[in-house]
Length: 473
Image (cartoon, rainbow, N blue to C red; front, side, top):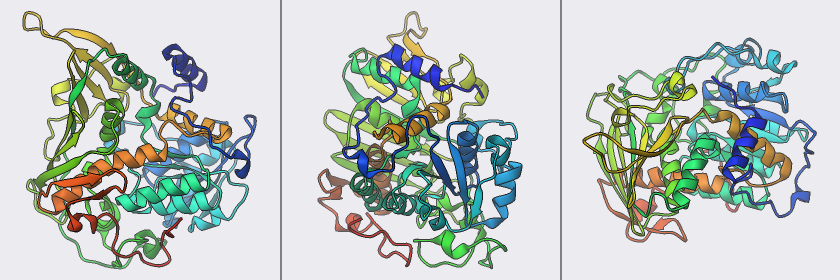
């Protein structure tokens, strides 16, 4: 993929008139934090190194302006391959074909320490920040405990497994004055900042309708018997705060389709589109949420839907979400499109956002797909009135995180923004689980004013010790 250097990113940002610290807020008492001077290399610990976690580790290791001191994972089988040989377990379909990466040790010139319990990393005062690519049900625990240990945090999306955890993450970031960035990379993309600027300048008019899509192919899985975990896997710790359960291969490999660990593709992947939609529309909490759907396309053990629609009411704005996981004719963008000046075929783009303004229609693609604004067609042909090609935004997002760590400011994708975006699919899933009940939201408490059954689903009923977030944090 094309690498965007920090200098290129800053130059592009200056051209947009927004700078590297767009939306930045200085942390009020930086003296309480361990200082990292602009000339120092922040020391990082990577938590969760399978899949996305490995890509995060490689992305930071190849930079040269930070150092990975630790790699932590409950599955000790991956230590040698991830830390030294650079083995990648799979290539996520959303990334297209990637070259086999070098190992972290070769990338940075020294091997990181590999530990099975990430709390050992938190105990090391030389570590400045934690980068976590764990499954969703561990995001809040890693973040809160890291903040309490004086570490800044890069945490992958979505923010949390449930709304209560997300708010605790925000409270921890503020109380301990930590930089906490969510892995919603498009917020750091120059092309998305141009889209935001276009809307804020009034070019699209007033937006009264926003449609968010997540349409792809992701089949169900047949049931398999519980059993013993593979040697080297600490299943009890992997299961963490979730209800007690024996090892099951489906839980291990497909956790994102079970309520106990995540919330299905509507939250684990669609959060990217949700976050962009909320950011571009400049809204916070919805007034009400309604969601319906089902798991209809294929029988199996997953308990999250493969077909879902949600409707959100904001002031003078309706936002909808539509998901289908049985649609192979809907296409995610490949890397050639992201690296080239190419736009997707929007009607069959799997993860687009449509913003209907009084002056035009903007269609936006995440992760480097670009955006176009359409006016009234002329002689049955589309009229494009504005557009911007995209590029992959991982590197600018890492730039932003490390700059925030050094300068003690909030990042482009601050955890509060990430929490507010994650609330949208979480609220929709609660409505769906209650049979499509319309939920009215109190923005001050983030609870529902009309549903105690809904409020009961805002957090886990119980957390297994010792995997517990203190309240207050």
